[in-house]
Image (cartoon, rainbow, N blue to C red):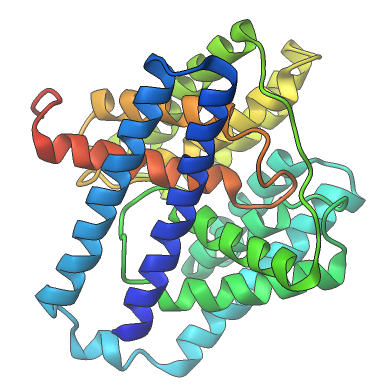
Length: 319
């Protein structure tokens, strides 16, 4: 129980950090206006709902005997599945040259087909493997995947059904590795307004496509996200030669939010709102944690939790 709660705090803390730096970036580029106010509000909602979820986990005590005594070899298998997913994706991404989005999509689909019992930890590992070789070599990638594997195991029963959780696990592993080994992240500039609008549009498309497959058609969340991400990674660079790779990143980012359960995002309206939030945070977090796998999932994780909080407050339409 204690390790689960600590893991939950790590997940929440990483998302909060990403949202806070997005506030600073919006203030630096846009001044104090609607965008910075919105991101500030989203951060507050994230903190509120995340704290409530962890508090409820502590107070409920709904830990079954099976939860406590899950066999060690199941945990070990999950751990190794994360590591394998990371290494294979990293190789396809950086050494075969498929790129992060296509590589993660392929590994996610392969995990679903070849080892469906472990598709979730494999897909989690694929987010570690989306890291750039300009930031991590194989040795550092292995460290990041080991850390992510540990965090995956201890956070398995908290924030269930929240899309983006797997990516947040991956980002924690990547950031801790960078801190330990002294690696520096890459930096990107904010996109222009026209590109920013396209980012939000494709974020909505990405989450709706994944949500439809996941919730409406009952497909595996991993298969749904990986299929949408792979499609975006293959098609968008052909349609938009200059900005296609960025839009592909946005689509797979939003697809992670679309992995959420129906309990978290009850219908398409909530999904659209989460997609818009993903797009906004994607834009204003651009200069931070570049090259680290899992950042996109962390964006989705925070966006979904913010929407869950809004739903709790009753400010959105009823189901």
